[in-house]
Amino acid sequence: QSVLTQPPSVSGAPGQRVTISCTGSSSNIGAGYDVHWYQHLPGTAPKLLIYGNSNRPSGVPDRFSGSKSGTSASLAITGLQAEDEADYYCQSYDTTVVFGGGTKLTVL
Amino acid sequence: QLQLQESGPGLVKPSETLSLTCTVSGASISSSYYYWSWIRQPPGKGLEWIGGLYYSGNTYHNPSLKSRVTISVDTSKNQFSLNLSSVTAADTAVYYCARSLFSRSREVGYWGQGTLVTVSS
Image (cartoon, rainbow over the protein chains, first blue to last red):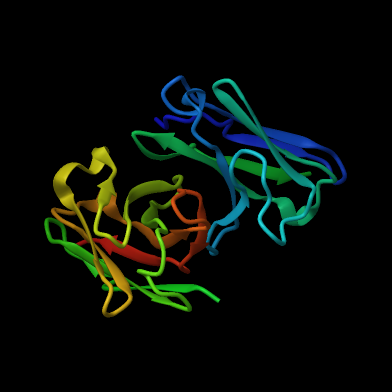
């Protein structure tokens, strides 16, 4: 059971917008710790998509955006593309580094 | 360009110690206050943070792994290592070494390619 809760799966058609939630508590996200997001394709290393709640590293398309409010955070993907099909993880801090359980995004 | 490469046995027997090394190239492990981590992914499961360290030697580990984890750094070789003792089949996973994107922060900006470690007799 992960400290950070994500939906197991989400789906959307090409071109649509999807959001992935990451729900924590007052001891992690709600305590003010940053949330980071990763994209993980099978057989590859995870890739940092969003750091510090809403910042994109160089090279990450602006189709990806992050937000945080209270004890939760969200990753939004607009203009969904086939290559976005992957697992997505949130990460924060709660006495130690913690990851969400992951969300599988299916592009219909 | 920073690169990280995991190395170590791909097969470990139950009750033995899993030992992995991460070799860092393209940057000095002691050049700044970056956070160096070990992260794993068991088959069919999500990412799990194992532990990490700063080059100064301060180490941190996942409490769920209790006292089985030892993480160390060898600045002379630009490497850091993971030892996980008393392994069971539940420790079978792809193990990644990683580094924070920024100094004094914990987002993982750089990852090794990962190495599969299987625990089996």
